Amino acid sequence: MQTGKCFCTTKGIKGDQCQLCDSENRYLGNPLRGTCYYSLLIDYQFTFSLLQEDDRHHTAINFIANPEQSNKNLDISINASNNFNLNITWSIGSTAGTISGEEIPVVSKTNIKEYRDSFSCEKFNFRSNPNITFYVYVSNFSWPIKIQIAFSQHNTIMDLVQFFVTFFSCFLSLLLVAAVVWKIKQTCWASRRREQLLRERQQMASRPFASVDVALEIGAEQTDFLRGPLEIDS
Image 1: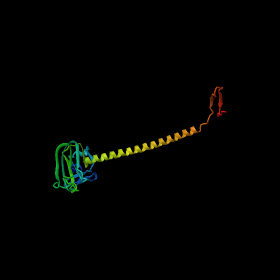
Image 2: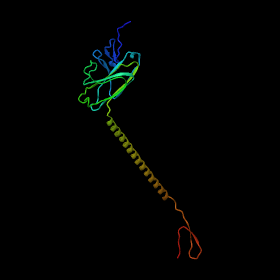
Image 3: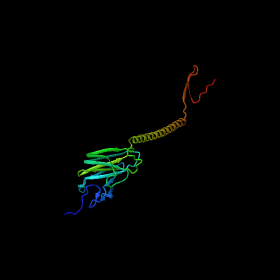
Image 4: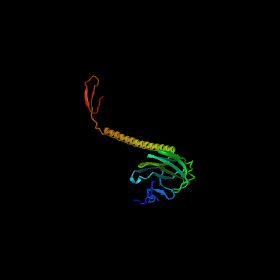
């Protein structure tokens, strides 16, 4: 029985006649004038698992990304569990869903499983083109497939500088805390020592006096044993 319903071969396109984009799941564009794209966030990794029966007819998926910082390169990383074809283009404005022609090709690869690249902020002039847009077309893959893709804007040198600044700041903070704790400990120890010495002196001062027996020999006479204070008659 024929229902007239089409099987959409591009992920994100839906409708009986494949005339709509799945906007509820971040797909943008217009398949009647071009195609649909999944809008990627910068500095996040996305995983697309086309494993369900509904994905059986999908052989393509498209992505769109806009640099967020004008002074940092835009890095892309993509890999998949099966081979695929890859095309990357760019334009100075968001033309998602329009017919190709305004986009400039920069990458074209076939039968690959992984790809990494970096788009220079100076070469593509991110500063003068704040609406610059990159389009990623992944096609000619077989079902089932898992795809991972990420756009990032990391400055390696600045990241290392920031890491060392943070590391030494934490180290100096810990060192300062340790010094303060040691100083407090030394002060407490010295205070306890002074109190101990004071108690020892007080104990020595409060001891009772005792009389001592003294034996004296006077000339050739016999020795007398005296107790208490000594008095000698002349």
